Image (cartoon, rainbow, N blue to C red; front, side, top):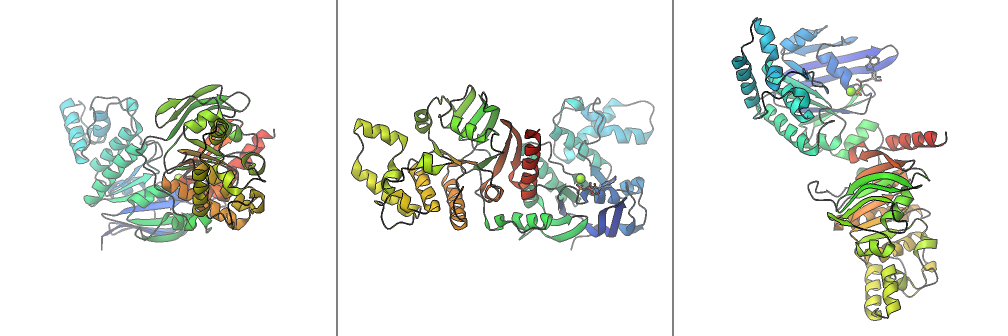
Length: 504
Ligand code: ADP
Ligand code: MG
């Protein structure tokens, strides 16, 4: 069993009437990456400040390297090898890389004259410790956040850190930079350091944690080895609510793959403005917002029904022009409308015909080119594939239940194998059972490689199906929720905020 470097026991901390921590214990062990997880306000930063001597707890004891502290001071914490890397990294922005790395040693040495050779030597050794290479004479403020973070880590190492605490360290980093940081963290762990990684991004925690500690409302609600912990379980402990998504596995998306659909600065006057996003294969991207937020107009633009006034659309990296529905269909975009009865189906026509009648095929029919036998075989295949509950494909669509009607609309588009499928309110007006099945179907389509744009204001639906969600407000993308940020509370709060702004 690894050595306990730090034990904080029965810590309580109040700020006025707010109980920030309530009888919380936390152990930090050598060679272990411990992730501290919790929603905003759950007490994570307060705990960090207590174990680094910034705050004194109202109750509780701290043991570090066998020494007992009732009142730990910041200097004592540093002497015990505790180093906190804050989000701003606490660097001198107008000094160079070498100067920032060496400054503590320079100050400690008390020398009057700075020996630049020595500064460079210290910096080089520091960089070598984490196998990093940075230009020694670059001014720190010109560097990206990831590089500044490396400097902060090196400084911590040079200060003889045994425990490195990182408070939400990935906030300003790109996906690649996050991976580079994780490599550094693993390297530190190999050398026997303890890492306390504070985050609320559960996918990162999944990737990096040896042990996971979860705080909720100032209490520790979970402390266990990372093996066997999954995101829904963590989400449950964070929020205290069992989310329906616990049963759902989301398709893995290849983050390095080029997007299926890329939209840049798309604008439709009176509808939406400067909308940019990417959609990958296997991804379900939610678009939510109140009625009038521009979400349906956006869908109709991508589908060519309301061509955009400005902006660019790329399909598989190639720029395309979508001026009409025919253009959209030719580029592999499918659309299932909001009002399936009015827009999507010919209720009196046979189910089979509804499946095979897409706009393109109507053109073909006009030209007399449609092969009727292939058509009905194709329809039967989709009826079976999507489990449309009907005794015969020759019955009119109006004989089907709402959920099954929606399957027919979906089948109609899936039969054309679109690359990108836009679903607008796919479960509006269907019963609960069918809803669940349609969600399953959406996940299946994503599994097969389609990129899906799901327009919906049904929060559980978005949670059940989406990898990411774009929130539109007054025609613009107001916020993007990544998977780990998607909670019912967060979405509700944003929609309520949007409603307040828009009703002014
Ligand atoms: P987290 O880092 O998990 O988001 P914090 O530890 O920052 O949470 O905050 C926990 C609770 O304590 C919150 O309710 C916060 O408002 C409160 N709190 C934190 N620091 C202070 C402070 N200095 N003064 C008053 N309240 C504080
Ligand atoms: Mg915090």
